[in-house]
Length: 93
Image 1 (spheres, rainbow, N blue to C red):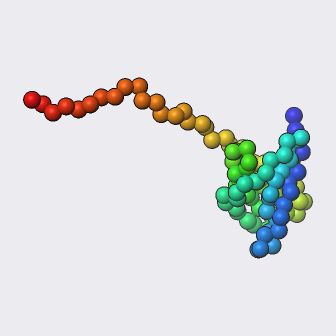
Image 2 (cartoon, rainbow, N blue to C red):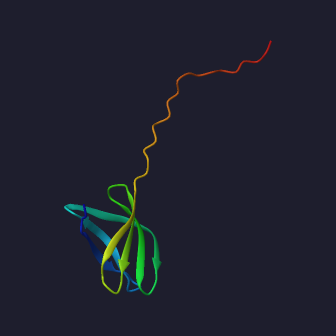
Image 3 (spheres, helix red, strand yellow):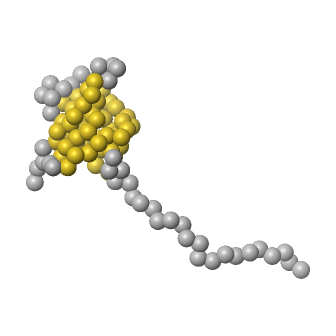
């Protein structure tokens, strides 16, 4: 099964088209933060945190204008620490 990735961009102060949101199939996801970026003459990579809490790496092929998703990562939700019992230290004697 394949989904088309459509990326909406905004031009940065450096003249780079940066992702602001993307659509994968029917699902739209907003970009909350660009964590990192790697730029070259033929490709740009953007590591982004999205409004769904996941981290994505989006690859932009500059000659063709095509976008690909190269990473999708959801941070595990850690359970809250629960104190089962308490121990007290007492002085001898």
